[in-house]
Image (cartoon, rainbow, N blue to C red; front, side, top):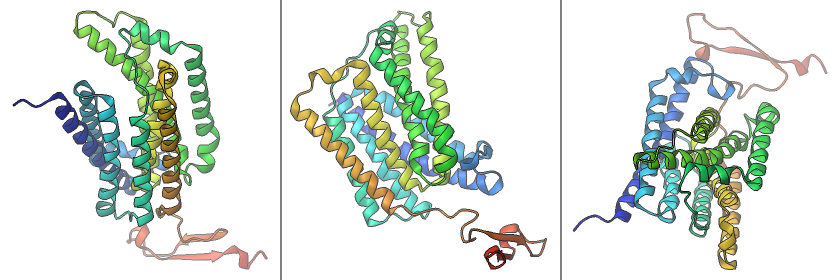
Length: 336
């Protein structure tokens, strides 16, 4: 007896979650090693590009994303999308054992709430109408409602990058992940258009002669690069067990929102489905708050040094900097 398409999609979706969840940990370990040898990604460094472990994480993530893409070919979205939440469990468990990032009991509850809320949202999300050409996607993308959404998204990203990142980027995980998620929703639309173009081209209807195809490709490349840059900053600055679930929740929520605006899927929703989606959003919000309240701060280079202190090196020059003793004087004793 042959294997059904749904079974193939189920297996691919689970493998995708395994690879993506693992990629967070590999990239995190790579970022830690890179930080020890150069400038941290969280403060603008790019030495992680020379770290093999980070690239292993990138390759693992790409494999996971490809598996997820193929899963949609065999199984419906209502089956594949909720399984993406498994990556949260994978990354949280691996972070607990491999990165020694303690996941408290309330943190587990927060993760479960995020997963349950996301599953409810996805299950009751409206069905998407798949466009039959790149030109049709372009017509949908140039609707006034979606253009307003894109303008609002880009404005929020600009404000986060210019204003909030310098002030709160190192202390609030929502800054970096907000940028990633907002850009991610646009990425999904662009990649969908590219996927349609490739599919039609393979069927003999060339779509790469249209300028719209190359426009969507350019947008996808820019958005992906932006996502990766700020995701690296988030992973380098915050606990991986926190980054993974919050990023999943925000990305899923914004993607569903962008899809609903662009494809006008909400018009066929009944009251029961809308109520269920609202409950899902509330559950997600609750889980996110719990995760913020229970997360552990990672130590920084200045941890333990009081504000207003003057610190200089006073050790053996043959020893590594982190091993040498320091003398710290609190200037409050002299400037009262």
